[in-house]
Image 1 (cartoon, rainbow, N blue to C red):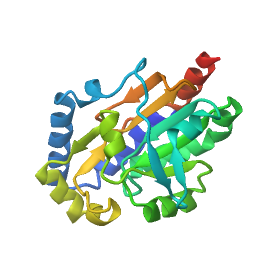
Image 2: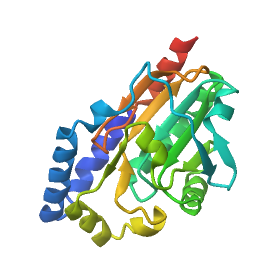
Image 3: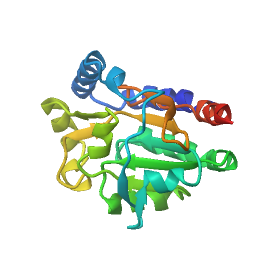
Length: 215
């Protein structure tokens, strides 16, 4: 089963558990975000990858320049550990981590969560790659991915128990679009995926194909 087939199956099962009025808010927010053109404004293949230096889950400092010094980078943005679709996607990337490193590349994931939340996620899923904290979403903004939740959806998330005020370090409204970039050693984005639909993610097979194309 592909990653997006797994995500779709989870989505369909989950829809039956969500009250109709909550689904309506989520669907409306999703339609408005899609219509905003946010995905089209995100950085695409051919662009220079904005540099960043972010804290890892273990408190180390990780920079894109240091990662690129070792080879190509697979950079993936996710919403947070509270998002079940993100968890499924990160588990899938972990399953393909050896295939990515075998191609000489480094995998790194970025979210707006504080390091403690990233550490819990790393330990839970036994992630072998760096999970970085982009508190305030400054890096996501540079990649054209950051957006603010509308009031009604923010209220729904709060009601569902997603304490974004705490886990995002005082920035509860700003999230990144799900996105993945394959960045060449010279800092050029060679392949890009960004979608306003948080239930859709880059397929690992496509990431591996993009890495193969670099060679």
